Length: 113
Length: 110
Image (cartoon, rainbow over all chains, first blue to last red; front, side):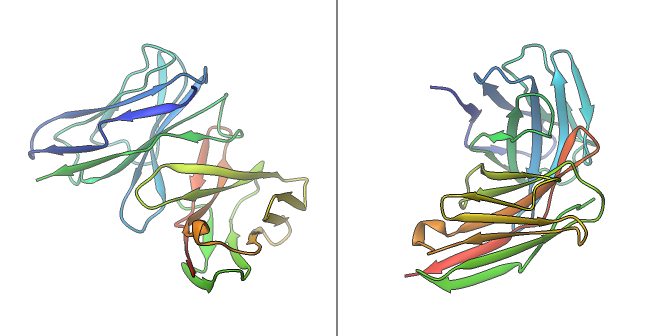
């Protein structure tokens, strides 16, 4: 059963704490992406990775960090430096690059109080 | 930066009617993609149209692309309650990333 999973679905944290969101895919895709979505808005790219051990900043990378040690996994850490971390976070993957369709996980809703 | 801009922002129609959503973009593209998002869920890819294509069909979906006007439209025919969702267009910026518009919220009334 191929797909992309994100966990947990809901996450609550206190302000000042770092938190890591999980993203795993078994589609054998090279490229993976993290997006942030605020209520009623479109998606904004945080980080993306075209290949293992390499990743690039997207449009809103400040306050976030990622790693890509394995092809299947692309975890996102929301650090205390992110000023407004409460949002819906979506992970996606594609065969190789954005010219191909992206497959999305179910998302993680992060609430920081 | 937002490459794709959808219009209208919200659309409410009766079940069985057709729904048309439009997308405009600013720069030249390799392809344009349409996605659907049910409330609180991830996005689902609907259709990809390449810059050298003018029209594409998939079931009840019809997508057109006019590169001279830098615009695309998504038509859903014979709408159903299950079509209620937000619809996003996305264009490839450079070779590396998709840029999404803010979406059209479609409501199908039974």
